[in-house]
Amino acid sequence: MSIAADSLAIITIIGAGAVTLIARAAFIVMPADTLVPGWLTRALKFVGAAVLPALILPDVMFRELASGEFVNVYRIAAAVIAGVVAWRTRSIFTTLAAGMVALWLLKWWGGI
Amino acid sequence: MQSRRDAYLQGAKDALPAVIGLIPFGLIVGAASTAAGMDPWLAMAMSIILYAGASQLAAIGLMLHSAPMLIVLATVLVVNLRFVMYSAAMAPLFRHLSPSRRWFLSYGLTDHVCALVNARFTTAGSHRNVDAYYLGCAVPAWLMWNVMVAIGIVAGTKVPKAWSVDFAIPLVFLALVFPALTSRAHWVTALVAAIAAYYTAAMPMKLGLIAAAVAGVVVGSWLDARDAERHAESA
Image (cartoon, rainbow over all chains, first blue to last red; front, side, top):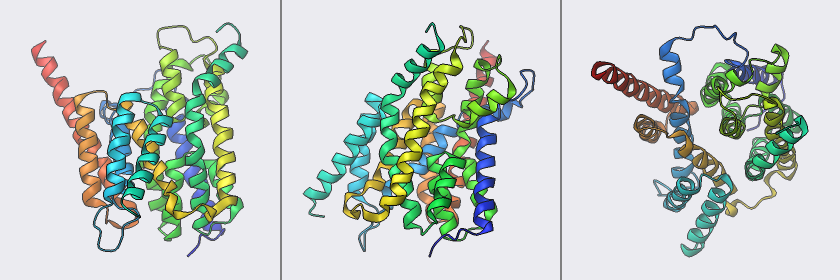
């Protein structure tokens, strides 16, 4: 399977770019006196808190599964360690280092 | 920050750790597009046009499985909806700038740019050279991102699978999630979204991502509205 560089792919990418730019520019280019509905401002406050865990969870639990494995225990353990580091340090770089080293050590210890 | 140059350099200095954090993320996105059999120029164009890693990955995965265009666009929108929130945070700081400059600055808006600019400028305080500081955060990140994606495209699948470098992606999001959890309602939102993501992971075309995000936002908004009502009653 592959992604062909056809007109559909090009239109999709341009459309996705437009959607993304509109999301970024939404409030920045709006005139100062524009009224934004209350439910929308309320919902937007929670977008980051909802989207990030929804992105994290499948990548941690369900990737690189050995046959017969239901969840990836090595990745879950490494993510818990990295989560504590992220919570304490708020640093992307330290979190990355801690999580990757933890995963490599766990896999080495587990003989994978 | 007296001069525009000082403001720019201060931004670049503050953004350095986040810019270094982009290295593995960019490489992975580049390698993922090669692994998906994507034309290298198309992959590079995608990186420059979207300039949003998480949504690039999601879009590559969906396009590889020939998902309908509307599903791709909806997923990209949901993954990037947090930019609308960042946009709202930046808007009061950019009121004095021309519309074309505001569109230009919008393109470079990312998680770390918003966090850094927010930490240094307040709505009530001075907005002098805010755009220079913003560009100091955003331009090195943009360059680093696209160079790393390019290297990832070329290096492609040469990185051994055993290194599990794709694990860097959830780790980057993990580092971003805690600063977003500013109240009890936000913690509940994250928990609901995580549980929903677990139960919807098997849904086709990554629809589980949209479902989990919507579930989290609905619960968070409901809690927030309820708390606001209680405050109004007790006041």
